[in-house]
Length: 398
Image 1 (cartoon, rainbow, N blue to C red):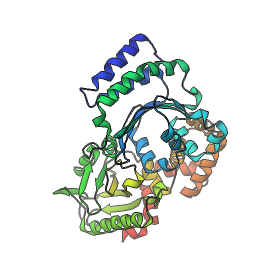
Image 2 (image 1 turned 135 degrees about the vertical axis):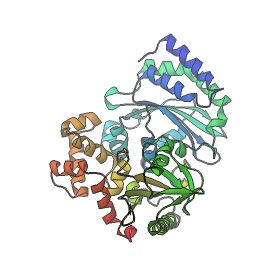
Image 3 (image 1 turned 180 degrees about the horizontal axis):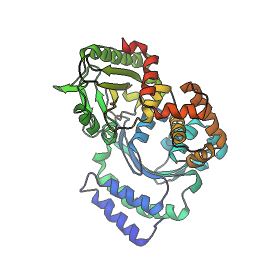
């Protein structure tokens, strides 16, 4: 930690620079993180009129973590109710409400928070009014313990400056169709991702997706629409329509199981042409299930894997292929790196028995029985994973 007066003055200067620089909050959060330490610092806002997550940024926050939370884990986050009742200017410390016994049996902590190194949360509402609620959250790992008193004192000294800057720049914390949280997160991903309407109009293609267009002829854009080979275009749009019908029929609770919502698409080049193959995984994003982070209308998120690209298959694709939870993906990844179970437990900050149970679940979901067999399977991804996904989604291959 660095709680010096020099660090304090540096933070104050950065805070007021946000009034002239819309992107200035990231340096502020980086400065606070360097001061108080811990796993991460997170600044987030909820628009009062639309009830949507209208701002999210942080120091040491990975976009895939935010996306995973938005798509799945917000539904079982035991901290949400506490945050809603939190009064401004009062710190919420989750360890005061959720003891070790609760954490040991809670799936949100065990599957999401602890694997991401975020056992402890201290949060404070900077602003809460008719326009938006803005929250500063400090995350700390299991071994670090709760936020130390001197670090809290440092943040409390800064809080009047933070609140003043947030109020003066409140416009950037309310909902804007031109600055959606989900779009910003997708833009940061290295995996090729497109957001589309259910009729194939492209709302967003991140940089990796644009690079993909130059690597394969199996996916193209024309007049703002996704173009696939004719044999696959119709199948893809039909699957999108089915997903939309399912979520509309079942309501906001439909598909909160995460990876089971993904459909698979396997495309190959025309016979006689240069060999080419492309895999796609897609799911429906609806405002009620994503905190409005992608806008106020349903969209399809389409994730690509092209063997000719340098992209590494991510946990979303492993989940789609095998049904693994994020925590299980982390265990599988460490196993593939040759790490023993006890070391994995220490790295993830969980009990050895937790990792052992997760490994048994991985065996069952991947139809493997021993670690060498599992590692061989993982080392042959994505082909093995995708083929399994395709078998489970036989209708997509018609």
